[in-house]
Image (cartoon, rainbow, N blue to C red; front, side):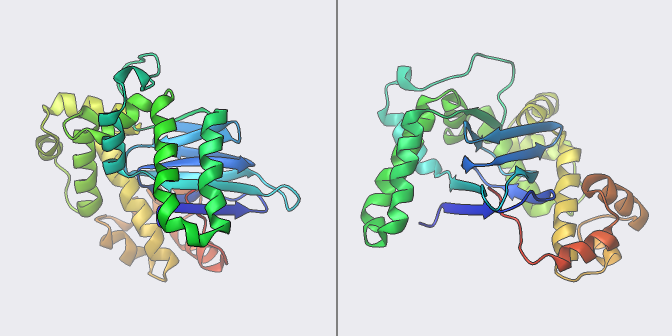
Length: 278
């Protein structure tokens, strides 16, 4: 199933830097903490996580043992299927959290029996691979339907609609993912999003828990960390991702990941298993 990922861990992990695509994650056992910008989210088997934007994050498994390993499943969100479901559903059936200001691009909500039943149907196909091509699209659609019925339905509607504020912020985010090493001009990003500079900055911060500059810096640091893990020298990684000062890179890297680049690179290369984003 191309949009499904299942992950297990037998012990707590250090923070793993990753970039969430639009995704929903369900923990079957254990607990995870996710840091996105200034926000810290913690969730377990009683809740599920949704990211409706492409967001840099640091995830950490905080509860896992060999006897009770962390087990989680993640499903990348198909915007076309979401849009089709929204068009066919009664608007009154789509859930919404009580308004709390600007719409965010990520959230955690309580799991329901209906949600678990939908996930169980999809995961059961792993034992029946001959049925996947026929049944997986229907089971995936059922999960998305349950998501739309829940409190985060409004957030998912916003990302499925091309002209919503969240989708316009996402256009700018996708541009930043492709051009993070370039000089950032907020006015150009606002133009991509079709907003005024002030409106773009406000909606961007609400959606990502970061300012555009913080977001770019996080993308650069995550990209540099991937380069270090693959064997690049710290100074070369710094300049490759857009830093002009190696010392500034080293300070900001240590602040983000807890170790200077060279020491973190040694630890990363010694890791046998790469952390998953679920």
